[in-house]
Length: 357
Image 1 (cartoon, rainbow, N blue to C red):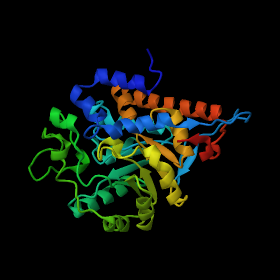
Image 2 (image 1 turned 135 degrees about the vertical axis):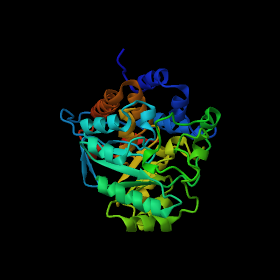
Image 3 (image 1 turned 180 degrees about the horizontal axis):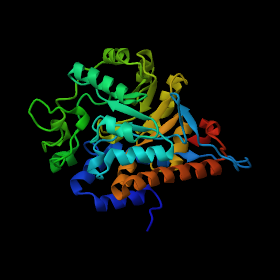
Image 4 (image 1 turned 45 degrees about the vertical axis):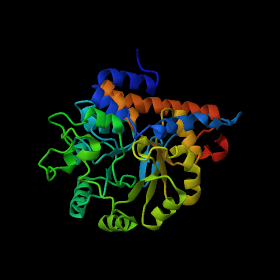
C-alpha cells in the first residue's frame, strides 16, 4: 500500500534498514525525553482557524537568504545517507531539486560536497562544525565555497557528542566502503572516519572542540563571503547574541533530541526567540515536524521555514529518490490543505493569532 503519511514511511524504513542503522537514525540522547517532547509539543498546539476566507488560490512560495523556494520546507542536515540507501545524498539532492527546495548537506555526508553539488538542480547549503584544527575548518570552508554552496550552517549545540545509548549498545559504525568522506583524510589513529565501531561519541570526539565560543563565530564569519546561519539556538539571549556576532540566520533546534536531553521542544521556545530576533534575520525550526500542519504552526509562531530530518531518511530508505520526493510531496500537500482549512491563502496570512500553545 502506498504510504499515506510520514509515519507509514518510517514503518517501511524500519522494516528495510538493519537495526543498527535504523536505531542510529531514530534514537535520541539519554532517556529520549526531548526526542518525544519535540513531537508531543506540536500536538498540544491548537489552531484557531478562520472561516469565510477566499482560499481558492494558495501560494506556498518563500524567499530565504536570496533563495526562492517552492515551499517553506527545507531538508535538514543529517549524516550518512548512504547508510539508508546506496544512492545516498545524490538521491536526496535530486529530490530536493525536483521539489524546488533547499538541501542542507551534513559535514558527515557519505558523498563529497563536489559530487552533491554536481547532481543538484537547486541550492545546497553546507552544515559544519568548528574543528579543533582551525586550519582544517578554514580549508573546508574554502572547498565548500568553491563547490558552489551559497550558505553555511554552523551547528553550535555540540561541544561534545550527546550520550546516545542505542549507538553505544550497538557499537555503531559505518560498513566498509562508507565514511564521513568530507572529513577525510583519516584521523590520527589511521581509522577511516566512522568505521571504528565505537559509537559516535568516541568515533568523532577528535573533531569537536569544547572550547568554541562566540569569538569563533566572529572568526568563521571573517573567513567567508557566505552567510553563516547558527543551528542549535534555544534561548532568546543566544538568538540576540548570534545576530550581534554576524549570524545571517538562526535555526531553533535541539539536534532532534540527540544532544541535551530534557531540553525544551523547539516549537515551545520558538515564539520567545522570534520576539528577540524581531525580524532581523530569518528563523528556521527543526525537531518533530511530521505533518504539514506542523509547518503551519511553526510559521504562525515565528519561523520563516522548517527543516525536516529523519523523515527524509525514512523516505530514502524506503524508495531512494522517489521516497524523498514522496516525503516532500506529502508535507507540501498537507501544508496546502492546512492553509485552506485555516483560512490562509498565502504564507503572510499565517499569523500568531492563528494558534495557541
